[in-house]
Image (cartoon, rainbow, N blue to C red; front, side, top):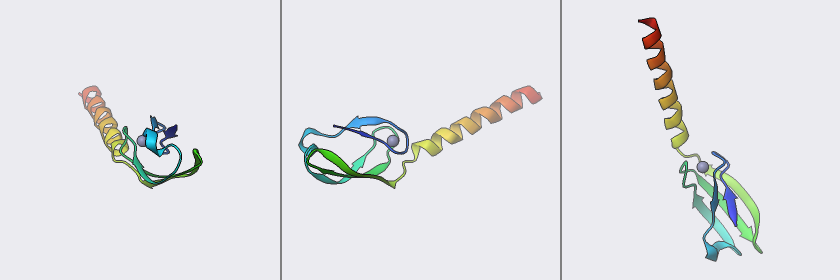
Length: 76
Ligand SMILES: [Zn+2]
């Protein structure tokens, strides 16, 4: 079974033993967000963001840095 991260849309598999019954946290391997997942009978009953990962913020900062660099080049 695959879970889709609600923050970054990354799909990632749950480990085999969690396929039928599970209620707890999983961590997105891409953005590091903590998601609360509840499975019952092999189906997702609940999926919500518990804590958003920080990678998105870092990406945003990186983008701002790039924009800033671009501006300083054109203003010279
Ligand atoms: Zn994610």
